[in-house]
Figure (cartoon, rainbow, N blue to C red):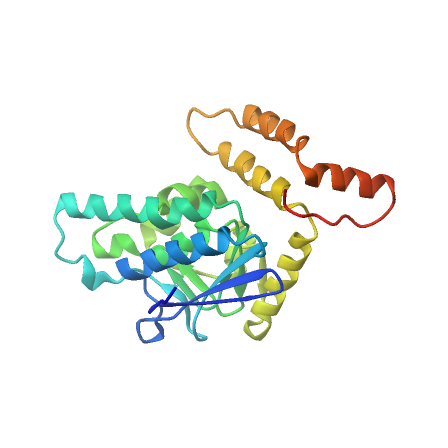
Length: 260
């Protein structure tokens, strides 16, 4: 599969997607969103890939927003369609992926870039990272899930302030607010993120996929997260990973999970 805007690499069970539009500070356009969907889908269906990392090319930006030139002249209907298609194709898709996805935020993560990072299962930031949702300064609001995921992560009041001021927060402020899990020097960002990925890979891929479903259920209207947890907890008992995990524990050895 050939891509123009992203680079995909894999090593030792870790798949990495690098958004490669450095001349545009890796800004998201429609073509890049489609490529990200296809790349994530390919990695998710590869049984050898246990964790996916998304990052941006270069040292300046993870993703410095959407490509404004693409939609500057859109109508009301076209704007709504842009948001709906983008959410379904990429942002909701990432959130629901059964393979864990970590955002390695190197530099600016603005607008659609922060929305992409927030759709990932969690985030690690470099010390020089800056994050924000500046859409209201353009006369529009976040359209790729930003008004929903930011309050979930940092609370309604902080999210209101960030969105209404259109301001950026530093990596340290993002860490204190709970927007990112870790802040590390930029030179160490990918190695640190991969170290977390390796810890994840020691555990059952089947159980992790079901945990993702259960956690996400708590944030869906009309869905009982506790019922989802109970249902997925029960399903684990029918997996080979459960048999291997419990047997290994009783035999006092490390489990060898196959993801089945």
